[in-house]
Structure formats: structure tokens, C-alpha cells
Amino acid sequence: MVSLVALISLGIIGFIKHTHSPDVFGFILLLCLIQPVTALLLGLFIFFIEIPRAHRERVVVCKQGLFQAGKDIKNRRVEVVGWVHIRRIYKEVFGQGYSLIRWSGEALPLSFYQDVEGLVDLIKALSKVEEK
Image: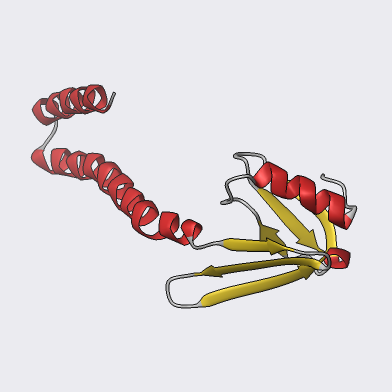
């Protein structure tokens, strides 16, 4: 698929090169190179930063609430939420992620866990909050 897009792009660039000045050709070539470079940088960011961060996320569920711990690039992050502080459980539109919405309006994402459906079912049972 990528090679097909590259061939079509080269054909369009070749046509423009013969019909327009070299300045326009350079500008269009620059525009065509920006997208793959941006996609490459985004892929490297996800592979080297976001995936390891997701692997470091932990959640502990107990009688009084849940405890979520994780580590960003430099800082450790710890959040404790009691069952009485959860207003609702929000299912994200795209993907399999959920968020716990607190009474203060802050969201606690539960997106990166392996059995997120089971975790949400357990949270619903313990907190007596419905999903919306």
C-alpha cells in the first residue's frame, strides 16, 4: 500500500515538474516528504515512550477503592480513588478504554490494562456506579 502511494506521488510530482517551475516542484516535494517524516517520528514516539509507559502502569483494587500507580518520563504518579468519589464510568468512543469520572470532574483513565473489561466489571460491583 505504501509503495502504491509512493508511485502515485512520484507520478504526480513528475507531471508537476514538467509543467511548472522548479520552485513549485521543490515546495511540493517538501510537502510530500513532511508526512512520512512526521509519521516516522510519531511511530518512534509511540514505540519508545508510550508503550513502555503503558507497561509500567499498575492498579490495585481493594474494599475502599483503587490505587493506580505509574511512572512518566521523570515523575512517579500515584492516584487513589475511593468508591464514594466515583461519579460515573465512561466508555471511550474509540478503542477499548474506560475512564472513571470523579465528583471533582477529574478523569482517571483505565485504557492500558490487559483485562480492562473485567476490571470495569469489578469496579461497577464494588462502587455500585453504572456505566454511561
